[in-house]
Amino acid sequence: MKYAGEQQERDGGHGSLEWRIEYTHCITNFMAVKSKRRTYRSDVRAASVDEGRARMIEAGRKLLNGGKGMPAFSIDAVAREAGVTRATVYNQFESKHVLLAAIFDDIAQKGGLFELSQVFSEPDPEKALRRAVAIFAKFWGMHAQSMPKFTAFSQLDEEVATMLSERAERRRKLLTAIVERISAVRSPADLVDVLYALTGPEFYRLLAIHGRGAKAVEELTWQAVTDAVRRFTK
Image (tube, rainbow, N blue to C red):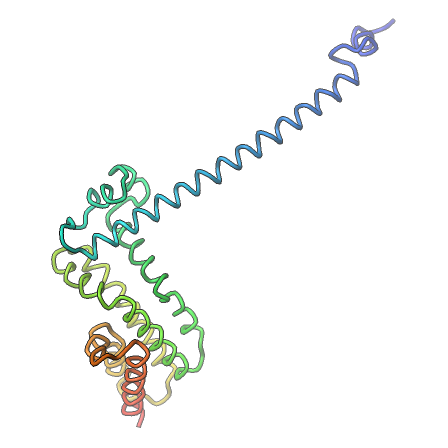
């Protein structure tokens, strides 16, 4: 007795071996094409999101810099400047604080402050200090015009003031870590305060006169730093 399935397979129906092979081949190829298309679309969408995020960060930075005719920094102002909706800004950054953090992270990265991770890993305190002075001098030089504007704006916006304070505290923590590696320091806390003042934007601005560039200011700052360390370790 022959089963119906056996007769169907022999006759080349949907149960036949030839049909199953052809069907599997078609499904496999079809799925591969769909997968590639989906990956391509995902990449395009991710690139579009990244481009939009960068545009919003740049818009926020432009507003913080201020200038004639520029509105005050706000989520609405960033949305208008970037050419997106208010909801789009919130979807990307969740809050004004998160947006400000992204803006200052972008400024830090482009200004070379992310190189400070090398300073943390440098076991020699003198080399670490030298590198820190160079990085901060370069950064303050790049942002000699914008930093005073940020500081002035912080007087009007508490969240900006908080963000700048948090960033400044990172510099203090870095200097504290370096001082802890220096042996026989009298009053380490005082030395940290002095180094904090010497590596800050205010000190840089005071030296960046008479045509001095970033490199010249860096050298003068390093001399002041080494003198301070010498005084606290005698």
